[in-house]
Image (tube, rainbow, N blue to C red):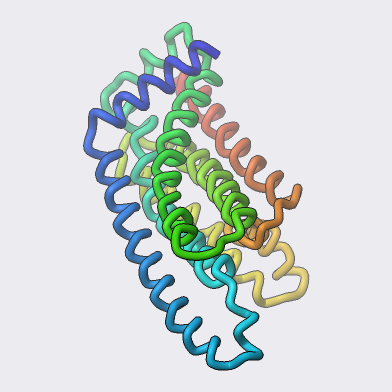
Length: 254
């Protein structure tokens, strides 16, 4: 465990001394903040219109009308930004010719993979938690059900975990950071598109729904935590880490 923490600490320091983490955090907060403002403005307009109709007034729900679409917007933003964080994890080691030194060090491959994964996951989770000002701001001016908010953040953290593992795998395949970022985005977009294909129905639609990386987020946004959704994200994470380990293991013997 100490070696994993050492690798993770090294990666975190390299993130914080470079402009990448700060630029990603700034862009993430600006984009999600703007999208949140638009959703709140739309909610305010809809609330005023619905309150004029007594039958529709009871349908006003800030969690469903504000935070469900906000968390979906956050997920889309992460789809674009996670590749920028993960692209350097192993590609930079190869480009700087330090990969062989790392692979021949006393640190085991599993510890290297776990440490780099943990560093990126912690950084992205910290950036995500900066958006807690959104529910706190809404709570200061009205009522709010914290259950769906907490499960929504749990779902997003699991989503980040899966995204990070896939990004780490893509970074292990090349020494070009841009190629790693594009490859990561392509894989994640493929998983995302499966959610659209699931709308076709039938057996094919059911398979696509089970494989889609975004469909499994819906339950969390509604305030429910289902085992199948948790297992899915953990399985994708484990698969990404396993494939990364296999790639590094094959590189060590070349």
